[in-house]
Length: 370
Image (cartoon, rainbow, N blue to C red):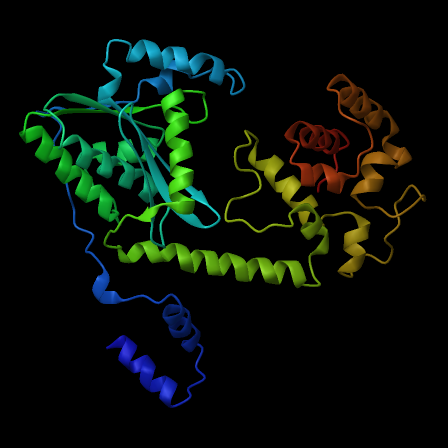
C-alpha cells in the first residue's frame, strides 16, 4: 500500500520531501517478495556435538601485532597437531571493489563463490561456514573442524539470542549444525587471528578474494535489513560530496577530509577533557582572540604579547609569554623523537596521540582555558 501511494504521488508530480525516499528505494531495485523473514533460530549446545573454540584470543593477548605472525602459527599448530588435516576446513570472506565473496580451503577440497549484492563480509563469513557444512554432510561421520578468523560469526552462532536482524545464513547454519549433530557428526568452530601467517587461513583468504572477483554466484534469499547498507553508503557519499565541496569548515576539512561515522578519538585511551580540548582546536573554535574576533566578542585578534595573531599556532610556538613552558614542551618532544614546531593543524590531522597529548599538557600548564 505504501508503494502504491507513492506511485500515485508520482503521477500527480508531487514535490513533497518524502518523494526522495521513494526514488532512493526504487533505485535499489528491491523486490519485497524476494525477502526472507528474519526468524529466530537457536542452537542448544548444552548437549550436542558442536563445539566453539576461541581460546587463541587469550593465548595471543599481549603479543605485539608485528610479532604475532611469527608466534600464532605455532600456537595454532599445537592446538590441532593431533587432528587429521583432511578434517580441517578454513573459511574466509572478503570484499574487493565492492564485490563480496567467500573461500574455503581444505587439503582435498577448495571452493570460492560470490554473493549477490548487497552483501557484507560478515554475511560472507557465515555463508562460508554454511557451505562448509554442506560439504561435510557428504563426508563420512566424524569430527570436523571449521577454522575462521571471523569472531563475530562464531559468537553469533554460539549466542542463545539471534539478535535484532539475524542474517539468513545465521539461522540456516544453526539449523544445519543441529541436524549434523543429530546425525552423529561432531563440529568444532575454531577462531584464529587474521593475517598471522597461518597457511590454511591465508589460502582461504586468497580464495575469498578470487570468489569476490570471479566466482559464481552462491544463491541465497536476502533479508530486508541487508539493504540498509546501501542507504548508509548513499548517505555517506552524499555527506562526503557536501563536505568536499562546501566553503565552510575548511580548517576542519584539512584535518579530517574524509567523513566517517566513527569519532576521531576512537581507539585512543584519553580523557574526556583531552577530547573536548582537541575537538575545539579541530573546529577552530576556541577562546583565543583570533576566534573571538571572528564572532564579534573582542575588538582585536592580536595577542596581548603584541606580536601576532592570538591563534593556536601563536600560543603554542611563538608567544613570548609562554617561553619557559615551551622549553619544556620542546624538551619532551625531543625525548620522544618528535619534530618541534609542527603546525598544530598537521598534528591534529596525523592523530599522533603522543604529540597531541604534549600540546594538551602544554595548554594545561600555561592555564589557558580552551
